[in-house]
Length: 125
Image 1: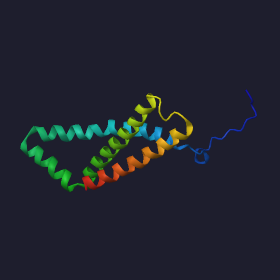
Image 2: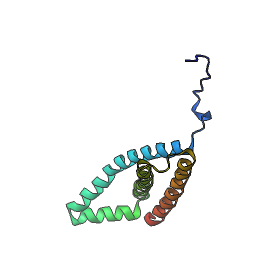
Image 3: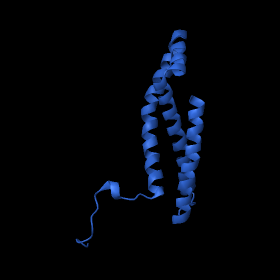
Image 4: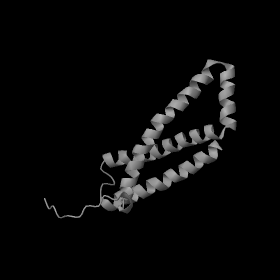
């Protein structure tokens, strides 16, 4: 091994390819979905306890900015994770494995996910 090779540990100067960004975001959205389930399960449990609990959840989701933001975040993570997961399924079937087609698929993944996230924002608000 060449011990005189350059070492760059400054993360701000490292240029990440779009395929790496898509992969990292897929993992991050999986974590967001896992954490977001805590809030969704709590709201679901509260809504099933009684009519008052249901009314509380409905009112909170209609009036609270934080509740809407959490719902939008979870739905956005779900949309991105779904689109990236479908791309990964196609890759498992042998498609988009070349450098150029993989880069193009990653760009399309980001575009479709961005459109779905905007639609989710319009739907929530």
